[in-house]
Length: 367
Ligand SMILES: *Cc1c(COP(=O)(O)O)cnc(C)c1O
Image 1 (spheres, rainbow, N blue to C red):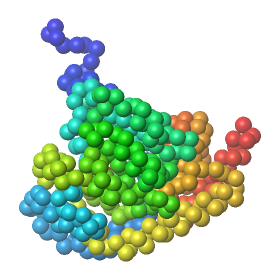
Image 2: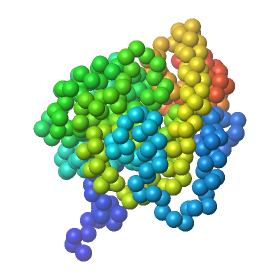
Image 3: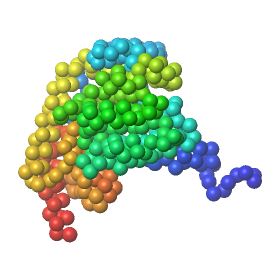
Image 4: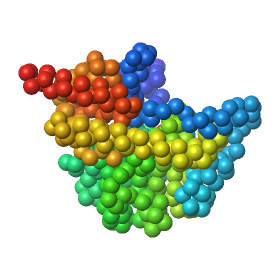
């Protein structure tokens, strides 16, 4: 058949070109060896919250029916927790699905989406999937989103701007005034997606108060997740807070029954276990401080971490360092020729990290 392009496989011919060229999401590696600790995916080192486990057990028998399409239970609990109207909240199958949905709803072919880079790997994929072109803006030297440069990158084709704070993978966080001044300068017809996946771990002066900003700026969508602080990465639940108008439209565009029955139960129960969540977060923060002090004493300089992870700017030595870490029993997350992200885990993981760093230093110094 004359229209059959032999230089492409059949599958390649039926997908849009930007789908064929999608980058592959590099999930953190797993190991079947129980001696090895995985600190590659920013997961919490604690098991599912006990109250959540009990609630899930109680829901297991009812999976023959569809979940509540409006997800009223978790939404009411989230609304109560943040003291906002339930009409300003929508839930999703993880916050990545929310980003995907929003971008596919606002972009058309040739739209531009501004994103910080290096940042969350899901951004370029969701942007490309929406038919848009990613406009990466390099981070500031301190590892933060360069908001000034991002403002400068806005063109008439810009359809959305992504902000990540604390930024994954550098763990640097912006201040409230920085983010507020930025949004105030973004034209009101361009939505700003504020990804606050790690908001619970922030400990700094003038931390971002995302929800307050959504009250001031109708073009702001604040994104949250149960995957990190709530120790629920496996259940897939996230949510967004925005104006009632924006949320009403997002709800219309949602996949019917997107948030499954177990995820709805788990999300509500996790919020009701907030004191235990806070206890866990404070353990991680304490471990983070201890690690920072140890690193400082040994002469390692890293951006002040505000997430449950740290960033080592090891450039071309990143894969070597990841290899040395594996030899010391931890799986970390290298980003080719850029750096290595290490999740704060159980204390033993941090001890192994320090040993790996010592060996890395001696090996790179003698090279
Ligand atoms: C982990 C993470 C998320 C959470 O994604 P889920 O789909 O909710 O698991 C969102 N944004 C960033 C930057 C992350 O690192």
